[in-house]
Image (cartoon, rainbow over all chains, first blue to last red):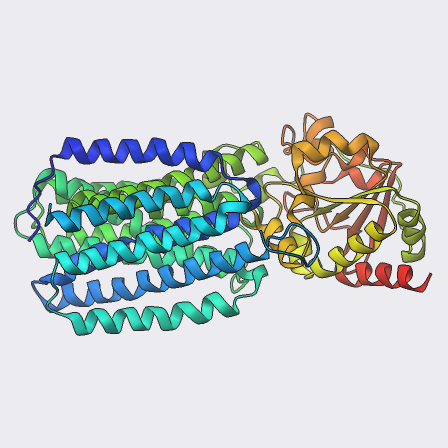
Length: 102
Length: 457
């Protein structure tokens, strides 16, 4: 099982650094791409599938198992549709009429 | 943490997520960014399955197959006009997943939950459940399965405040007495109810902001879960998502000259309507033939799309007209206001789908710099984002909002279904300006008629 071996301070540091990094990175994203950005970050945050898998490893009872299974299905839906939709949208952005993709 | 190989896989996964967002900054590298994100996800999932050998591999596989079976058709079949709905739906799915895992983890850990873990879990569940109902309502509104009008009633903020108090109260209860059987169900119900009321009170034009805020919540709740499970890849990915939603929400608010609070608690449509100076003057309607003559003589044309473009599916027709004008030697571009449409970047995606080259899609500030030398602006289903009252009328509720200054061009042709005011319920003095001509009718049909005019002559 997962006894918390990482000190809270380290996790907080990771959180804060990710936050600053995220704010810096997103600010630079072209306004053109805000919609695919949203579908991409959506897919990425569905890494919560990992959390569901961890809980599913050794569930104490049936209800916990059912909740985690539903969560895996929901997150998997987001992962698959998120990355695929982003790809579909990005393929549409072309530099000239009907021509080459970037 | 778990075995060292798995830890390094998590590091790799987190780095890929960061590069994914970095490459997303420009069109050229954006697809690489998407693939990096996908690779990061795959690595994270594989690493987790190695580290935590599940007793229920069959269930995991079934759940993943079901998710894939739902996800693929959505991704392949979804029309681009429905991307805002899809986004709202995926926020609902993602936040429900996180909320369910949080709830499961709560029961898993009973009866011993330390104060810190319980605090984070409570925050995570409140965010998760309220984002779930909020996003579901956003989806229903965008899909037009329920009315897009904000639900306003007396004492709305008192009711909302009461529900928040109940949610926070039960959270504090849980932190003090984690084993108490009633606090969790109360917390869940209050959070669900709050999310429902929050988005019921929001109108269509505020959707871009609301979607961005919900995006942020969904990410933050995933990050909170990372703290509870001591899983760093979750913290990183959730935080990046949270940051993204936050920045987008700020940009949307700026583009509307409004604050977070006024979007969430204002009920814009109802409170703002009827204010602002009365507008009077003469409307100058135009026939398709006359519009043809104006466009034929233009050497620079700017199209300004709004939500009406999406409603009448006029993006292809707009691109066709743009191409015809370009072939005749005119300089053609598209002025994109950040809040045109129902989610950030909505117009760009629709026009890109219609094969408009992305270097013709110009942001508001840059297009405004060219307005004085632009011959014709064609406004397609946009209203508030081109309303000059935002600059000229200090009593207007739109005053101060950055707009696309179409009124500064030589001639403005407004494609509009009728004289109804825009979402904000504010009269648009643009329609009465001397250089404005109104072309009534369905945007798509009108644009097609114009293309036909050009083909004939």
